[in-house]
Image (cartoon, rainbow, N blue to C red; front, top):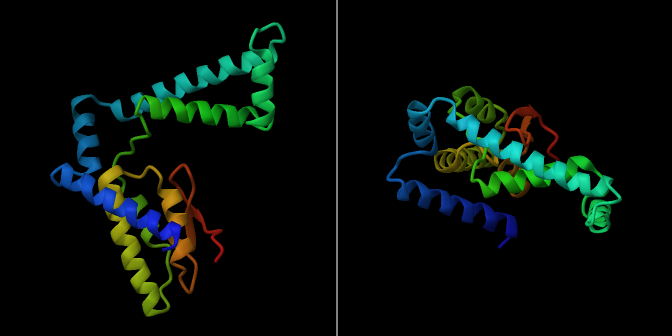
Length: 186
């Protein structure tokens, strides 16, 4: 089996298990419940994790830029080798680590316009296109119910890498979860 298809199928099974485990309560039901109890919590936790990641990245960069720091040599080597001398790469990794450590991914509130925009980006030309779109809708709705919008761009890319349509989507998702004109190539 193609590894990407296996990954997609495994993710779908995990999403179904998550929904079953939560007794049908969706990710957005949980986010909205927490939001009702503590307004702004869905944003605050994530930004606290981002701030921690940024602070850790700044600490790392101070080791890189201060030749008198005891860890300067190791930090400079890591900065050159691991991050290719790019501060943005350092910040991205440290922020992702903090978000994961604090279990505080961006928690978006339900957005029907976003979901409609994702599904309206297809031109159906063949029965196979319709079958792929129906499968995509089913998988996306299950994914959103289980974990929300986090990771949509990766799922979108993986799904259409192994389920090509006769006409590529006219839009695609970026890492920030927004829909943009498509650049997917088959």
